[in-house]
Image (tube, rainbow, N blue to C red):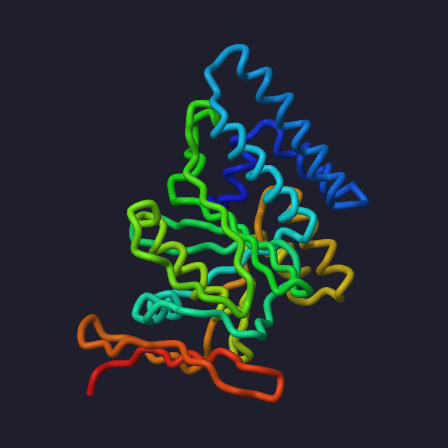
Length: 279
């Protein structure tokens, strides 16, 4: 089952398909953003004639539409950690700063962030030329099935970060509920930029044997056609991040991992020291 936040948005917003089309067809990003905002404004105006919709809901819907549209335009890329890597990051001290060099995918992609009470998600737009990350963070309870979008006030947090820059999340009441998720976003971004990290594709839901054969053994063109066909049916490819040689952690007695910077000819780069068992 595809229960990613992108799929929930598509299922809960009647205008999602049209937003995707606008971003896929527009030549300029600015034009797509403008047209999507106008579309959402018209849809919300119709809903407002029947239901109560406040300004915060409107602003949130504009931000969601733009993030989803950019995600579609840039190839519907999703990244998440495998079980071992996610557990190791839970036992790693929060990242305090981003380095001057950050080898991340360009454009907009989605991060899936595991948690004890469900997965959160973050749309991340990376502009390498500006050394900037724009992040839209969404909580695990985003767009529950069967609840119309106009009946909910979605929890969403937006922020922009430059690198090199501090990413220490302050201890403030306003950010208390967001802090663990923000720290998770920066940790996964840092892992995604590590040169030794590997990616394993996983489809949600799993493809049929015939589709899997095309994905595994076809030529590049056939694989691209198979991927496009699966995406069209509502399936989603997730790149699971893995780190070879990561030792399993015991239930107790774990020495926390940490991040450090290391000088190189291209500038400081991040190095992750994974957690390990005591002794």
